[in-house]
Image (cartoon, rainbow, N blue to C red; front, side):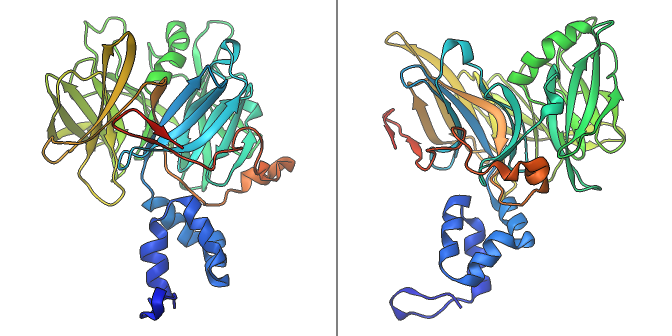
Length: 400
């Protein structure tokens, strides 16, 4: 039984754990270990609880911040519900020469693949663990990190450039192993040398999306496409094969994402509205238009908001305007139910809103302790000094 303040009635421990603690962010949850021995054991080693806790966490877009005045580069998770920026990782000694030294290349289940300190690493910011991905250092592009459900492993799809013709050849790496398997080329023209050169930049702006056991590339205009921008390619993670398909709509303003149901969602926005399309059937590649949201004014970019306990999808709308010689960015949180403005945030420091998402997880992974890594807990400076949070306020001030 959980103790109550002021001698009131006690709450059953299961109710406290499975209805209250399970909803807490990772940091305050871990502080609750000090309450009693049973909580300490459950909150740190009960696999069922840790997985359920992860599923209750919000899926938050990541912000990158490069501050020339402090020589610090940082990655935060933006909580759309409060405007809070939750620190995720950082490096110091920022210079023009290493401006891109801290970047998120892939994300899945609370794990991030980072380009940090000149190398590729997989890390869990919630547990402050990381491990190098030395086999992938020669890859021209990290396409996706995904969970392979049958084996329980995590795998990375990556692209290597073939020396003789410059074509894209894809490989799969099982994290924690020394395995790097070739899975072949995507359909033409996705394997061409031109696409190999363009892919890192394409993935930087529009990361591949993992949904229902497949990895989806953002629709792009391909040579000979007659101006249509609805060509897509997918990689089946079970069959380890590529497929080509068409998106349900044409146009440059398309945003792919994984819905809470696991299905592939696509937002088509422009002209003051955003239409939500859902891929209903992988066999026939049939889509349905499920929802329309009214958008405010000119939209620079759009990100879906994923609520772990609801089906209504709000959106974060990014817009730009110039004022007093400075470039300002604005984020508006728009209701998916009626298109109303729920909140508005803006900042004057340089921040980039990434399409990679972070969903905190305290689930244990054996690959962090392989080959003498010992989990690399509290390595500096990647996770050092990230105990405070910054809040975005409507008056542009930042509190720490």
